[in-house]
Image (cartoon, rainbow, N blue to C red; front, top):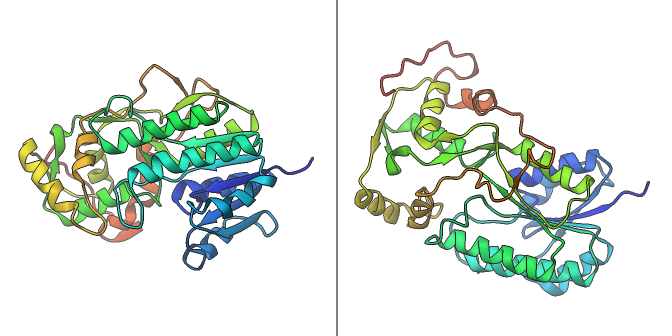
Length: 322
């Protein structure tokens, strides 16, 4: 059986690396587009055996160059997304709305079999978030230009390579207290990166089309509970202090001045909304690929890096803020 060709945008991130390994092990040939071959090419090459992966350096908005890649592509997968805006055209509109529209048009023009696009959970409700609005506009552009596309909406994605649990554990290990935005009541359904790539692989192999699928883990956990669990895993005692919205907003305005913001005003807006299944669309369980990895069990595998004494620490957690 001839191996199908997958064209992946965003292959150097945590989801992309997991996905490349899964696809190439299952006889798919992968072409990855990256903006910086020298920085990311070596890392991407290590994810698959020679002959199964090709790396192309290109600006993702160089339509003339990326167009050439579609003539031999069976499946296009877009994993590109940003959490905050930056320079060089890295705006929510460009990355989340314009670029997916370009890909959808090219998929239609070259009769690509499947187009899988990674969006985000909860964007229908977060109408006052620029991030959410750009994601929703991107979905609409895709559906208009390539109706057969499958759109995946994951909750928070975590793994040893994430910017979620690892950032929280770093801050919790260094700060004497931690602020709780909206009293830490916002609910999430964290999905492990491997579970999410299992969903993508399932969509590819089962030829699933024209769906919006909400990708969630097996648990619903509040932000406060997530922080408590992480504290237990790194054997730390910290005060979790609710912040009034005015103070939280001021802190977000300060943090977003950093080159890599800890928090932006738009992210603070997003935290108002639960990140759990909407019951309006099918979930990964509904399409036959339920998540199996439990948050505490998976994070425990790498949490020792933030624990005093490291992997073999015997210090026990004694909660004072439960």
